Image (cartoon, rainbow, N blue to C red; front, side, top):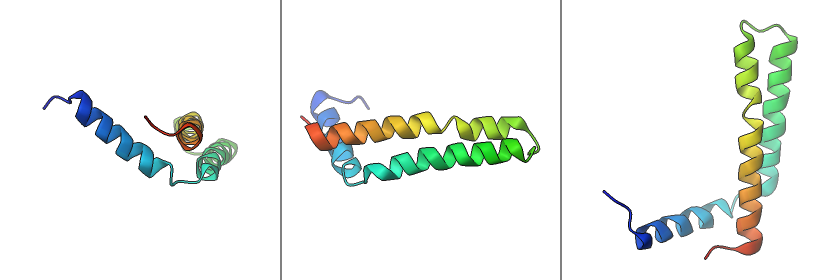
Length: 78
């Protein structure tokens, strides 16, 4: 099923309406928690360093989602 422009606009508006309801501090908190858990796993010499690195990489996407959320709240959607 191919998305038409009208369907895409409708989907985008729905997503932006829902994400605007989430407080921005949630995304910042999630990023800080992922960094903390990553550091804790690294310091505790967890089974494998890959786990700590994997969780640590979550911080950037959480922060990007927070920026997107802030833009949607301040600028709105089309």
